Image (cartoon, rainbow, N blue to C red):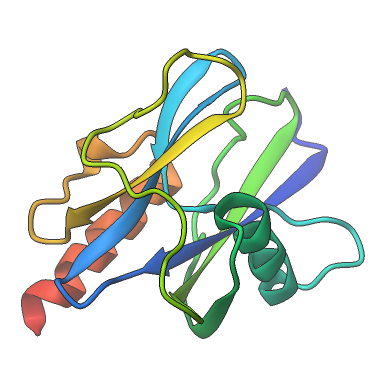
Length: 152
């Protein structure tokens, strides 16, 4: 199979004052997935603008994008799409205002597994493991995040 297309995704790494990172639990395309909040870059959109748009769509509130954290530096075939390579860009971010959306205490905190359902939860960076996350590039970010926090 030949890779003929790119998919670019942009994600927020949001860390609270308890050294917890925000995760998104979602049901999409018939699959339960845990990932960092964010989504797909549209044509004509810059990565930071994409992340700000995704924050409004997912959280209903604005974020400040603070700094670049990581961009995929290895080949990754897209999980859901044939002939596509995925590149993900991660930024450290914070909420502009106090959180107004629901933060759950458990994973997949929604009634039914309907496409598009989503819930959010904090997890301690110390407790975060690669197995907590669904996709390979996010797993690399978990590795980098836990390495950085263990050195602090």
